[in-house]
Image (cartoon, rainbow over all chains, first blue to last red; front, side, top):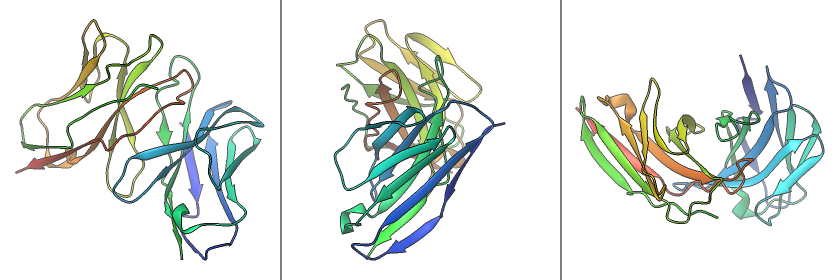
Length: 114
Length: 110
């Protein structure tokens, strides 16, 4: 069966510090991968999605970047965190057609920027 | 980019059937309709997806009229554990343009 991992689970970082969140998927190959952010009490915002190694699409201009160095690895980064980067970060994967719309989410990382 | 509109909150009692309707007037021809459930501090969980007519699985049913401008998620005989936020989404071929709005906060009462 497929499994998605995210780490760390929680993170407290000062403003201006760098960020690296990692997501890995097991049990499937060539998944579509997604990064979402959820601010407190709000819906999820799609940040990035990737359909293959090195292929990243950004949905929202921001202080963040994403990379996909391996087929089942997706990394979210920032060079300098802002207070507004605080939130709940979720990684998700989906298979190809016809299950593209069926996304499976990881446990999430709760980031607090102080 | 299809926008969805759902009720902000709903209350129900254990054992009742719950129907949550979502409006998506600007849905595109290639868009699918997908519903997710989210508990606090967890990622959303896929419930059901459909393109038209009716889809049913072991958890829920999804009703989509011919014009596809709305959809209704039906949860049969809800229990306390169904208390969660339910999101309706329509999206593009890779899941891009998936916009998770505020969702519907369902509270199931004993």
